[in-house]
Length: 200
Image (tube, rainbow, N blue to C red; front, side):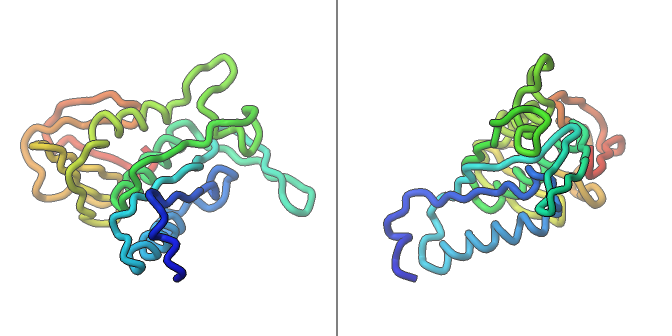
């Protein structure tokens, strides 16, 4: 309202609800994205890039402190954590988020630290492979279109890449396709063999 956006090169925000085991509903994530994107668009700064400079979700078994002095034990598998990153990064990219800075600090086993990149003795968490696969395949996309909930199609040069985790397979897909999995591995198969589920 006071022309502050005139002095911004990049607009950044944090999103750590899920890092501390809050509701991971994509609706809450898109409400945040809508709010900040609209804030810039309505002030005539629709080309200002969005960066998310602190962001993450927990993985493994954690003990989350509550305001009343008690705590709650929660658990999230590596695959569920990877799927969360996949869904939120793909959705965020469709809103124009150009950079995601993953929250990686803290001792493993704590509410905050359980989102860390490394676990003692086990190396990288699985979600890192998911983020690398996104970066290697669609980071330099030319356009993105939301087909439906959980369904996006990216154009990268002459290549069309679908990011899917919900609903039925788009009807315009046919023939042989390459499927990239959350762990970064890939399989070539006929479209009739493709299946996916929200948490995988």
